[in-house]
Image 1 (cartoon, rainbow, N blue to C red):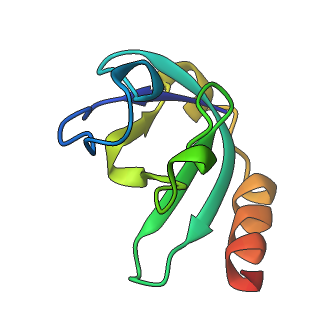
Image 2 (image 1 turned 45 degrees about the vertical axis):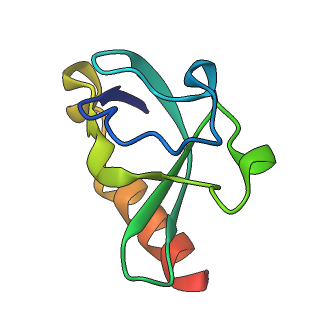
Length: 88
């Protein structure tokens, strides 16, 4: 699933600009995780945040689903994501 970045503000100082999302750019969803603070974290294929611990995920609020992909989301896809989130 493709995501569009809608918010690239507040980049942590220890993450280079080249490793940060850019507003209006399109990214590919890799993984979704419910975080300990109750928010939802997003991993994307294009940028690996793991080397920048403690940052591992982008906030889900930074993205929207690409309009061309919305119609392709089925109930089965949503159920799989919910099960994965519940298991984490």
